[in-house]
Length: 309
Image (cartoon, rainbow, N blue to C red; front, side, top):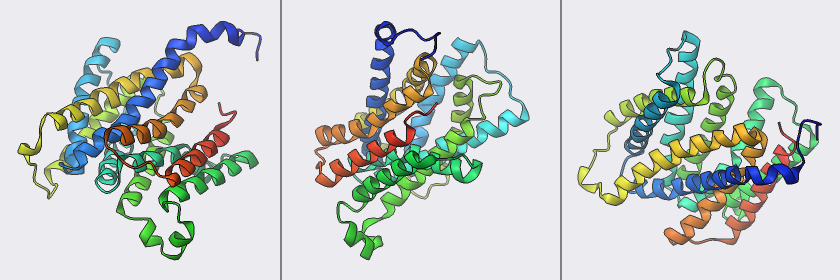
């Protein structure tokens, strides 16, 4: 503890609202798997994702205009960076996210989110030669074992004999989503030079919406407007407003108040809430393999990120 840091018993009360908001963010993000599963049953992935970000972009533009006073003009480098963010974190992630939910239960899909920090750490080591150290490698191994238990549904030997029976389209789509978000995170490390997080996210969402809209236009699956009931419309609004805009604003309030490392710990609650909500709202089974694998994965992530700054 540095001399400038107040004692823990003095800062805890003032941080309680932030902790509550970050827990609510994890709950909102866990709920995206429920809403996404509902949409994936009736809409093509590109159409569902386009609806989500159409709502998000409208709200983000209004919020940016209120906070910044205008939409700042970007340099060429900033334009290319925000396009890369939109292509990875919005377009590729959401196409893969909804495609996975069309193939897998929401709770099982949510557990894959715990792999995001692990994949990010591995990409940092591979692309930027950032050292991992023994503790991080042990954490990665524990998380990998947990993910293997979830993916194989507890039958590791059977999966080893026939990998095709354990890893289907849904698992591959979700692994693609995890990798896309890891790429988004790495690009985002260099994206905030000269731009606020809000402006960066708004431009990324605009680029992503453009790419998603193009994909929706050329999607071979026809849009069945008659299938859009109040539940589907509510799910789209929830994903755009709660899962994207509110989640983003509160998350970055946490980063500003308690720092990125302590804020990122709350991400470990996302798969927990996702599994619980899927069990409560969708009557999905909560298997022993999901429990054991999920706990191992989260423990591995926490071990890998312990002491991170």
